[in-house]
Length: 186
Image (cartoon, rainbow, N blue to C red):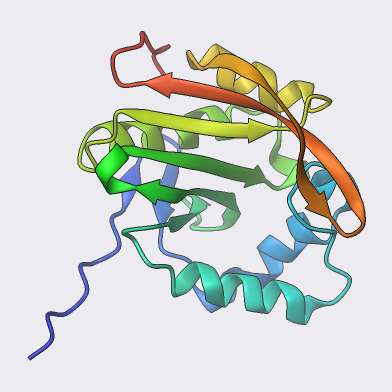
């Protein structure tokens, strides 16, 4: 008999509940994925149709925790989805993973990403037992670079033409935080 999947972990902060995605989060995530300014640094083009976001949310729901897992970043009081955080490209034998995040542009600059990433880092370095967490950030994405730097991540270099979005090649800066590095309190 197959073992049932482990429940999706819920991560709580003073203002947020990081929980499993639900199909009713589609409209909130479409506000992110259809926003050209928000998507300019993402690994794909802005969504032009709601069905694209529906597919993305279904992928978030059906994630495979050993390799990747996504959380809806929800307001702890209203349960309204404000964005997402995830780990992906996890390599358990190397004890590392890559983080991704996106917060609804209407909710940015309120400390939500800092709070959500802090909870995710606690989970990565705690229950997941990772040694290294990394983030790939477009060199022009100064807000995201400031965010991870404020959390203790260090820039390790530029990966030239490491990502192709449509027909355009983009470079990424590699940032990393080790379990042994000092972290800013969140």
